[in-house]
Length: 228
Ligand code: MN
Image (cartoon, rainbow, N blue to C red; front, top):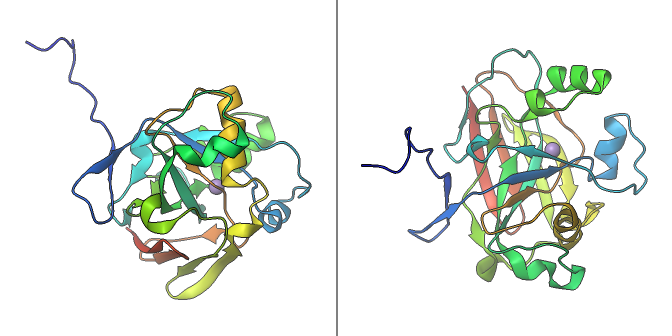
């Protein structure tokens, strides 16, 4: 007989390129406004103020290649990002040791119900209803750092139906990967299985059913996601 009183939740596991093993997910942190041009397009000052984070749920990550158009919105936006997968963690991780905790990287989309997020912002309420909904974070195969090296520069682009919508370079991130890890570890205990979405460059915008999104990150390859 099981020790649990109810059906046990499934561990969310993401495919790893070139491996039978999967990457198990513990938590998902997302940084906001990490590219100056995107901060400006959202109506904010791009000055380097302290970073801020919100969370998605582990099972919002979706490697299926399909994004079902969500309920209760008429303005779902794409945000092309890089996911950083941790193999270990801790608290108060010094900047110069931060990258030792990285297992790998993957292309990811921080899909956003922009209309709902906007209402929450106006009312000073949390963003979950705009950000942490079902299948809101399509993610490509995880590429181990042993294969890719650490990603501190390189083009990141997003096309919708072949037309370029977002374009940036990872070297434009206001808070770099080691800084995000170190900063988060001052406020949370990081651990193996944690995932950090590193923010999006300018050019976010809506998609509709039938669209095909293609994110490409130099060093990580491409991921195609259909809006269904
Ligand atoms: Mn984002």
